[in-house]
Length: 124
Image (cartoon, rainbow, N blue to C red):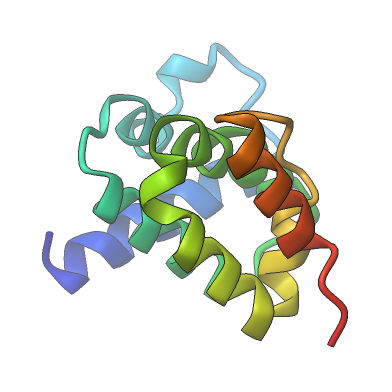
């Protein structure tokens, strides 16, 4: 995915969850494609890039909540063993990412989940 396409996706995702009118039939919202893209995405690397880029934009608490409980939680559940080292490294250097981890519910294996909990509880 080109940087321009990633930026378009990230912007649409943030704008969708920032839109107070998204309560209408949500699938009819013109930006809903950005949410669906996470649902159907089979490339965990692209998912990781999008999560980090959305977080870099410093979105609202609403966006943070759905990003944690959706895309990040799904990444941990499906690819925790492959991504846990990067998750820990990102949490160590980024307070916003640690905060994002706080919105994830238990998923993956008990070993991976223990590492996720430790990462989100890191103290600088």
